[in-house]
Image (tube, rainbow, N blue to C red; front, side):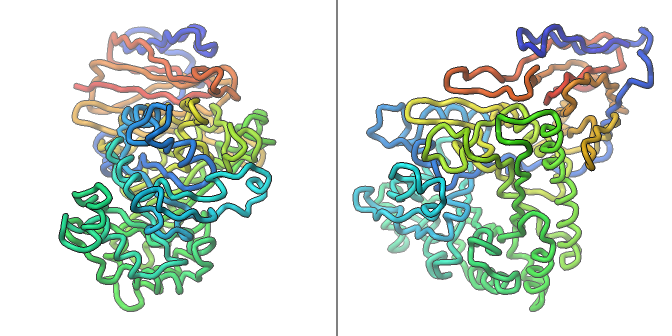
Length: 538
């Protein structure tokens, strides 16, 4: 057998990986060999494109200075939306974007954000009292101008060909307000007063919004409810909602990370009057931030690297735990998981502008957390129907950083670009065998990933979290032969590598050469890497 070789990859000078299949060369020492078994005949479920969703809240620099620059701006834009961001998003094949929050959603009145912009009210932003913003200059991060409202958000979604996911205000508004927002968005042209109002604002045709979040973090900033109280509110808000020609898919405000008592409490209270209420819940909105490790986004060492990746990988156990709790009341699992907030969360200090609350600079470490997480979602394609990384731009584990006319993609963007190839594929069971990495009291798998089948094409993504070890790996695909193969790799010799306005291409994926000479497949996964193998099968 032969294995993939690479020359100077860690220096990113060139990508010369060669994928080889052969039948006659001797094996290397068996004790050092890792293994991946791709079991094509053991399907898990179809991978929903909505797993690769996004989140845009009115917080810091996400909307203003991020997505929205205004139609009169000298910054290139489409109808006021930053052109560079739209162009990049189109390459991702984005599925769904959640808006307007987040905690902001439960302080938001949708009527403030419709009509002529110069007539829209200015409001104190939900986040105005944070210590970070108290020392920042005044502006839209503190005082919401409502220039970016429902119509502008729908325009943004249409520009990037994504489904809108709107989060309703349960803490501060009524069920009637929510139903009227649905009517404003979805009523046929000219059919109602709100539909005519929408047309007067320049939007004749209905928006056909399918996804509706019923509140956000209702255990906290969304109202400080008990799960039983929230179940009552959920029933009330979802009763007799006008459907028009698109049936709404309601996403309930689920637990904070490991709080299984919230999950059990909600489902027990919801089903007390009958199991039929389960049919109103499309998704259970789990939130999980794996936080940080070390002193900050750019100030961390090897132990911190492994600690954060281990925290990110805990998403697997989190999904299993809540799925089991849900199953106690929903034996048929009619309700799936919608993990509509997830990501890393580092201390302040690396944001690109003083008003960008929770802004951070993402490194290779954050990219591998993203890759590990997307692989987990793929492996649970039977359980997870939606996920939304937090957030799109200038906030937490964002895909982009922007300020005024400056704009870059982060390493997280490149992971989403690589992993987009999984969309709509059939997730198949894949077993990884590699030496575990032991860090403190925790353990991290030496290799992790996922595989999806698209007809005769197999997409295999793999993360090697080891900073020092190349993982020479035998890849077995029983019942299939590889005809062609391509490789795309994101890696760097510096674990703190990141992109900046001054150096935007420090960390970008590189394509490898693939050469097939036989039947046995060996790949050497570089240290600290996320790799996508695209294999055409016969």
